[in-house]
Image 1 (cartoon, one colour):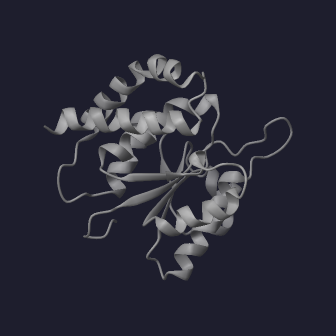
Image 2 (image 1 turned 180 degrees about the vertical axis):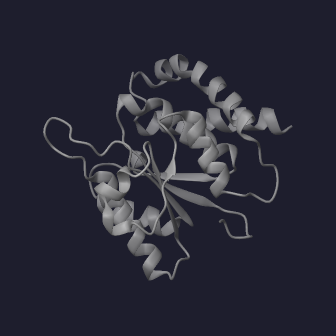
Image 3 (image 1 turned 120 degrees about the horizontal axis):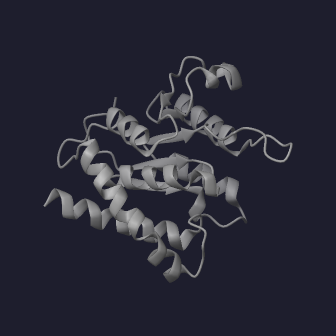
Length: 198
């Protein structure tokens, strides 16, 4: 579980595709609701991306890795999430566990088949649902004050989701997986959080 001091940041390793939008939004809202700063590769330009990802992991107390979408796409498996998980596991090893690693999956026991070398890590199972993500996040991060319950997190999630058309229009893009939209989503989640905890 989380250390006693207030958690500052978490590295978020998730797939960036339209089928993952609801869970992507759940992670952003849930982590923001818990008062965490999110470090994500999404906000990193392609040039020098691997170096910056390593830096983001080093800057984070924790990392979350969602392996629910590493299946084959167009005949090619998706290795970005396992690669970043490997970097975080090495960071945890090199820091004697000061960097904590958590893995989320959609289905039970699938991770044990796909990445058997990490069988000592029990994944949190979200069942492909935003509520499952938020339950998992609340079980990991026990913040000392101003925490919210899962129903409040879901209320914020729905409030931010209603704003998606506006946020897409402001960004001039239909994709949520762009640096500017990521920033706007984080701000929207923070506003929703402030309304709930007042």
